[in-house]
Image (tube, rainbow, N blue to C red; front, side, top):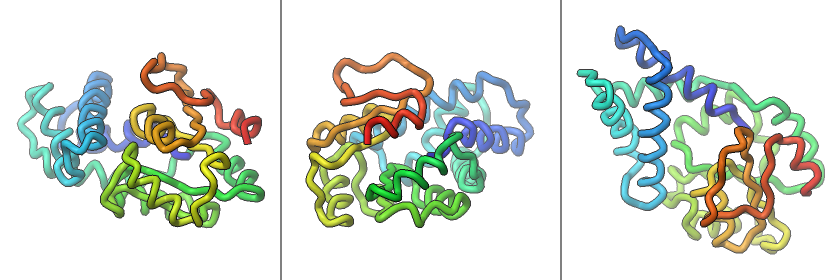
Length: 213
């Protein structure tokens, strides 16, 4: 629903320039690399959320030999990230239309203070029958316990009637596949997939969802 790339770029720019460092494109590329690595470790159960918040900035600073406070950067970054309300074009129209005939559930591995504030900023609560945030329930996608909780919130629908839509192969698609649901990979950048994790469907634009449901 949210344009995370734009939000991430904004928050990183603010954190770096707040520390009197001149922003450069390489900063974003490097942050993407270390952030993805940290989230993979989180999904695998090897890194707690509390550690992730500062660890990614510790790794980032090491890459550029910056003598900055990684913990403070992590807190500042989350504040800026939570303040954003950038949505993917067509997202609100999609929610409006789908919510008329379908039961929608928002499922995310995001950090609770960021996700809850974003949800409030964009006023999308009413579209969802349930909102499930890993940081609030203590288990994350792709683990089955996350989906057990989500299904419980909406009365245990038949898995054949559920479509898991997400942009992460490692958490959304792997988790949905393992749980026995049809899956749809949102891949607007048309990046190369992973033969080990194959979605039932792949789309590059949100409007393609209309043809699937």
